[in-house]
Image (cartoon, rainbow, N blue to C red):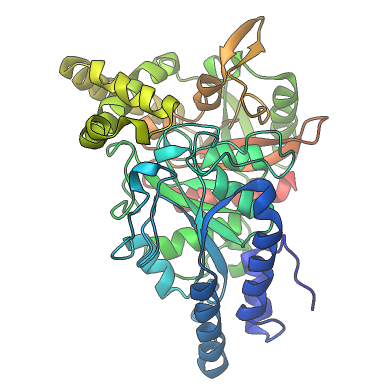
Length: 450
């Protein structure tokens, strides 16, 4: 049977189990796609073709003898190049780590290896994950598969571009201010940020150790669910569509106020249309607010900046020229945050967490656009919105970074396109430590939205 570059993990796993396709064939198709498209999109920094083919052949032999270990056995995936894979360079898209080769797998990589996933390589990103557009990289900018003149979002831009373009079935990214959900929305795929601390971040180059998350970027909620389970050490097929049984329509709190003040018309129209469709399908949709949401950016920066600067202090002093100028400039800003400001921001983060918890009262999840804008053109510094120029970076972080500060699980899934064909993302936010419940509700929403 032919290889569909947009095939889901669940579909590919069923075909592997039925002996309709081999892991080696899927892996070769992904490698061929990377070879053809990486010169255009620049989604990969390192392609581990020999490792991938060796793993795929091992998977085929084991599956022939004993059957698949689970739905990831023999499935080709990639990793954002902040995440250690034993024997493979981890560059963080920076000249600072140009000679670094990982000595061991990060824990989440070890778990995916145990689940039988095939490793295609390491994807490009915004240098050290310190940006939203994936254009400041020692290896050149990543480009959006819908329009190569546009950003794929960031910082996990290479991961989302690869998934959307069929360069592997899924990828693993990181999220400190929105870096999984932003590129998922900009490229039109699914991106999951679990609850803060739920998945281990050891073996991953940090951006901000108290805000960093790791999670999957995939083509469907079911695929993201399979990856999430494997990454938390529970590799089983739990997607509701596979286990049978009905999922009840969720109670949805539609966030307004701050969250809908600055939206491009195409995004506003797609968001409102998605809410109507959910309500028509049986969801209870009601307005919600987070009164302190406008404090998010200041709180976030007073935590993230000094933590990033502390990690980079030695190399920033020793070889500042090895960083791209925009990233170096942001790192230097962290030196100006005082201890009092940092401690106050940590206290403010706890207050915001309580406010989000309050907004969730009586709801299963909160809904908000993932990005207030469509994917911007590469090189755009600001956009005209509501009659004024607003920095692109601030816009792209505006609706996602709150949930890194509070730690609530959040997922972005496609909810339509603008007239230009660029995708719009719907962000759903769940209760702390209730990622599976969020995934179940997101699966229902995905079925409704199509």
